Image: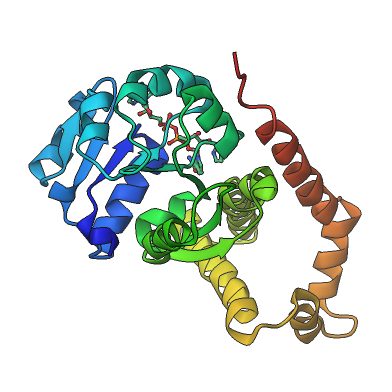
Amino acid sequence: MSTQKNIAILGSGNIGLALAKGLVKAGIYQPHQITLTRRNVAPLAYLAEEGYKITDDNEKATSKAHIVVLAILPQQLNKLLDEIKEGIKPKKHLLISVVSGVSCADIRQYLDIDVPVVRAMPNTAIAIGQSMTCIGSDNADKSSIALVKELFDTVGVTIPINEELMTSATALCACGIAFFLRSIRAASQGGTEIGFHAPDALKMAAQTAKGAADLLLQLASHPESEIDKVTSPKGCTIAGLNEMEHNGFSSAMIKGIKMSADIAAVLYKKD
Ligand SMILES: NC(=O)C1=CN([C@@H]2O[C@H](COP(=O)(O)OP(=O)(O)OC[C@H]3O[C@@H](n4cnc5c(N)ncnc54)[C@H](O)[C@@H]3O)[C@@H](O)[C@H]2O)C=CC1
Ligand SMILES: O=C(O)[C@@H]1CCC=N1
């Protein structure tokens, strides 16, 4: 269904491009069905060669699309909305916003148009079809939400949430990619200190992290139950784990996620 609808991604930075590449990789869109916008389009020349439509004209991109993805920074949003406002048609367009800290109501209020808006909070693993994407809306009908879900299902796993929880989803899932990457990096640095060359240590740490995540996802088990299987009495795992906890491992992760959620909530200034 969604492949019949042209899509414009307004703001082709990290997440906009990751989304475009993920949709094409999943086979749900051809590059020529996707319009990518950016103020300076020169860095997107290679994508034009791959068949994507590239432009710096947000209004034109919007007028030719059914699905319009807002993928710019919160502080860039109002200027972009000013550019596309005239071309937004509530019966034609579905807006999908991946912008952090901006509610669907904020967008409609700024546009002063009652257009369906769905928020989607993906993460950069969308480029390889492994995103955790949270989806929520306060005004879109079921079929619009289903369409957005269908779109993001092709590039990872989706979960519908109440829109009020979107800043929390931003911290846990979108920022979360960076938190887990940093912990893998730290593990690899530990690995190098105990004898492995850096590239080997990184590969070993990343595969171990992937195995840990898959144990939870595939067996639907609880982390502590899997941890109990690793910690031999008087063994080296519990010694390492307790040393990490004495240094605030879990506490640091919890506090970091809370800090990210607090900041995500105030990223957008309405005036
Ligand atoms: N990077 C991530 O992992 C995630 C980001 N987000 C959200 O997605 C949004 C974009 O984030 P990033 O991609 O990281 O930022 P980014 O800075 O990499 O990309 C934004 C892009 O928008 C372009 N842009 C700015 N004003 C424009 C305009 N008027 N017209 C067309 N293009 C314009 C910029 O040139 C830039 O290429 C933010 O609101 C962020 O909170 C959401 C989930 C994950
Ligand atoms: O750091 C940020 O503000 C954005 C939102 C989620 C991921 N990147």
